[in-house]
Length: 239
Image 1: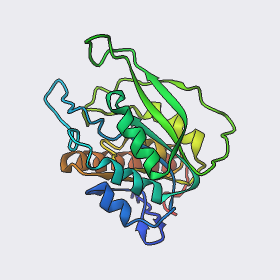
Image 2: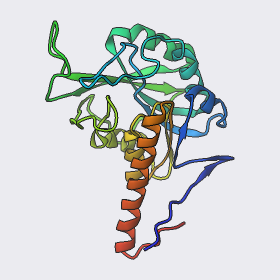
Image 3: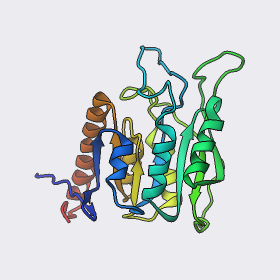
């Protein structure tokens, strides 16, 4: 069986791929208002180090934060949404960057975890993300609860790897099939996998060479699984 990955384009820029490089520069090369939804988990500006010693680039300073959010605002279509995870110790900085770019908060998600990622003054058993609007997006037909479950992944591919199953409800709630989901800080490409598995297109951007390679390989595996499933059902694997 021959498996073919179909690449779609938004004007002159390919989709269903993971770009390697600085997301600010990459987004500046994208057409304005070409993205239907942004789902992303950027560095939290907390100098994070996991139990194996892995760190994240640009997690110690916020020089990138305002330019990145301004670039994200430019590429997002009018009257559409972004879900952006953030670290609560730097919430003011993130809110300032979002509002400065033009976004306005319209919701807030708490993702509860069954485990504690750290324990100091309290056990840390949740993560959080803002739902941010450009313009006046229509209300979803089936609004999500603002408390969601964040399943543990084991972080094999990335030190802050999110579970695809936890991101799928966001993609389904805020996009339609075949629309384009962008993740400018794609890490292990969980958001891209959630997009592809729900019949959406994706575009990921990752700065770190190691994580870019892992994300690209992961998405190739997802494409191959989907193509094999279609083949087994007698559905053409090319478009």
